[in-house]
Image (cartoon, rainbow, N blue to C red):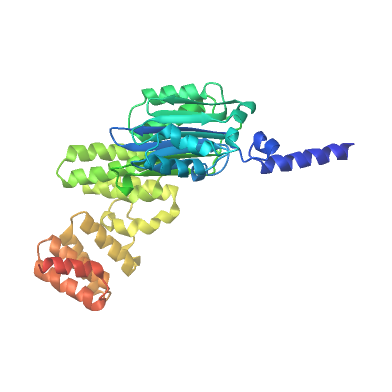
Length: 408
């Protein structure tokens, strides 16, 4: 008898391990416990969706956005036809309700679907398949002003919390969508747990680098990681704004944006080099050193970036870490390149000449020497170095373009 029960338990565990939740196990359907919000920002002409589930890579199959046309969130027993056909119908002049009902009318398993959609003007429509109400938790949808929240297998207050949070939230569309999603999780989320989350925002006027497509495909803390990714997105923008502001002569804005960037970029180890650079650009070498130390504490492999900070070699905290005597040619090129970024052209020229005097040279080193000469206004020497760079490597496109520009 004991062996019999062990066998049953083993079989049940195997089934549960391969099934994402009880509805999937009992029905044989690929039903996900999922919740989402879809919305439109008329001022920015942006469409966005935030979604989370107890299964892997939720963003892979539930988010469909075409700027200027509309967007669809398709969850539960996912069927992409609702979005593919829906976008096509919208382009032909259908309303958002007609666009969704077009596929629903032909779908014999519509009772397993949840679909929400929004058109180019922010009109919304959604439906929740009848069968989803029989599973654990709550299933339903709530249409609001230019947004819809929906989900299945949820805590009782999830949808209400998502809707009210979105309506009261401030900031960008992405920030409001994520606030709504996080509120849903705080209100109980999915009764089956959590595993992945995604956030996508696309706009008619957005450049590619301002479009947002963030995905946490498998994690014990997908909401925390999705928030971190959005922080990194906006942190990088603020870091770039800081550097641009400094070059434009607006030091107050530069410092403000840099402080905002630092608060958002903590944990993104590879961008610490740029943060350190920004501090040094603004004359704050001690702050730059602190970010370098932080980078090394978090990731020992980050030390490959140290030669670029050759200019800080005499700082007490780095003197034992930056060893010019061990520099290879590539290290010197990185050191000189950083000096040029910091507008220290004369120092860059001097270092480049010292390296050349040691018998080391490359097309790229000559190009950097040319940039240094140009930065300090010695155009004749700049042209000589650039010509030498091309003599050593005719494929050095940076040297060729710079020389062409100087010869105009």
